[in-house]
Image 1 (cartoon, rainbow, N blue to C red):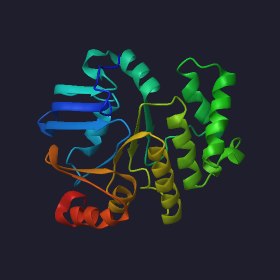
Image 2: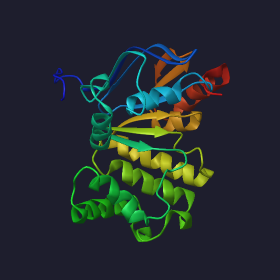
Image 3: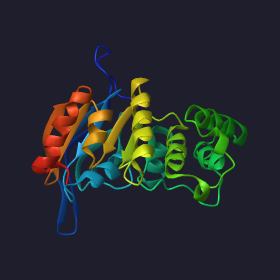
Length: 252
């Protein structure tokens, strides 16, 4: 499934080539080209309606391109049926959402373990892996707590543990701090930084220039369904760069 790549360069985890996506008469993506390499943390910003969420849905295999090629972890997603896409997503992609998407009637540990069980991992192994991750993320003490009784920050940490339980090649984050207070948001940003520093590939869609500046090594600005501009971000000084992008209309 993995493609051959030059060992001197990081593997390309995501490659979109001339991708178009239309919803009836509305065009969401108009010839989008994008690459994300292993170990990168890429933030995607842009005004509402520019195609950010559509991009994320295509990479996740939750939607299909009208034309063009979407490759993730060496697999052309256009070659997979719905069952194949679901299996691929479970094994290779972790997803973190703005509003957590936890199952309300399952305690935290079961929310995390279920994602592993769906790939065929035994219940015992799944719970062991889930508890290890929850411990690393500082929420093991809340393993028997239901989502409604968790704080926003705790729910997002449980959601991150669920996203990581199958050791995905790619972690997708859709406004991961959007529903959090400032303190919890800072904690989630720290977590994303830590994950990237140990090699996790991240693709983050956000309106928040602070998140992009702190967590990403590259900023992709979208407009009218395509990439308008890309730039490298380096350390805390990049916040001014991301802020300038926002003020110029890249992230309203």
